[in-house]
Amino acid sequence: MAIIEAHSIKKSYGNLEVLHDVDLSVQEGEILGLIGPSGSGKSTLLRILDLIEPANGGELSVFGIDTVEERGRWLDLRRRMGMLFQRPIVFNASVYDNVAMGLRYRGASSDDIDRRVKGALEAVGLSRYMGGRATDLSGGEQQRVALSRVLVTGPEILFLDEPTANLDPGSTATIEAIVARLNREEGTTVLISTHDLSQGQRLAHRVAVMIEGTVAQAGSPREIFHEPRDQKIARFVGVQNIIPGRVVSRKEGLTTVEAGGRRLVSTTPPPAEEVELIIRGEDISLHRRKPGYEEAENLFPATVTAIEPMVPFVNVTVHCGCDLAALVTTRRAEALGLHEGIEVWVSLHAKAVHLIPREGPG
Image 1 (tube, rainbow, N blue to C red):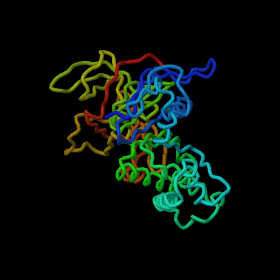
Image 2: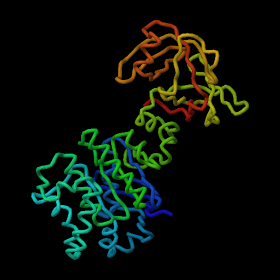
Image 3: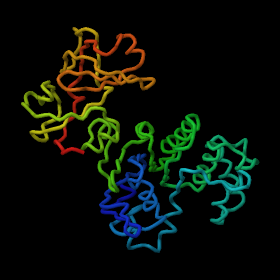
Image 4: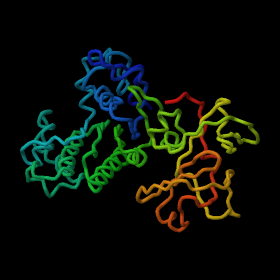
């Protein structure tokens, strides 16, 4: 069941168009990751979905209620949702009072406030700081205070706008664990915008990619990261190889494509005669000698032309008619004894070669 339905959403500030033609459906109980370059409109879209500000056009329903027609119900709807921003907002008061603030505004009883605040702080692991000043805490702890202030109101939908952008890895892992547990145990619907692509893959059931003010593609993490719809999405999600090619044949479920004099096979049905091959570097395996056990449909010799350390990985460029960038672990590269000019064998499964229609330069 869709808990949020957005169609043809538009938003401008003066002559600056920030969002256009945004279509997005959010299912009840899911975690939806919103990713995209800076300036693509992620934060603006979250603010519109959370009813902090209105769109300039389009349709938006939340909890099955038409928010355009029912503008007078926005306050009631907003009380069923919560937003956590990138920079933690804490007040110069005790941790307890910071978390209790929203409940006091809503007129909750003292007993109810006490019970819920203590429960929220326990959920984020800050019970021992209850009487201390929030401003004395670390950045990661302050973000957990801000999160507990949102959680204490029991939101049915939780919006997270780059919640871990300024946090260390340990604090990030803590926030992620809290969000995942909240979704799993309470069934809270979560929308999280993030620049961290690995975070999107770790947390989200589905991912929506925003490019230039609109949702360019939405789907499972596998679809987004391994089957991007076009060049721009492929580049954003870190695809190392985008290679022009021409379809030669389609037989027994395999499409044969010629790229730079090398023929590769893919399981993707040909979307056009002129295509681009989308291949992630981590899907390419390198070997010092021809493997006799390899089941990959693509197997051919190549020459190493460049090696670029990217700890804990190594980006290895090989030439095999066309250039391919393979991502291997540092230990694997050392075991292979890789260096420029060395001959290697490349193996690549057909399902790892994704085809999209050829685009112009850009």
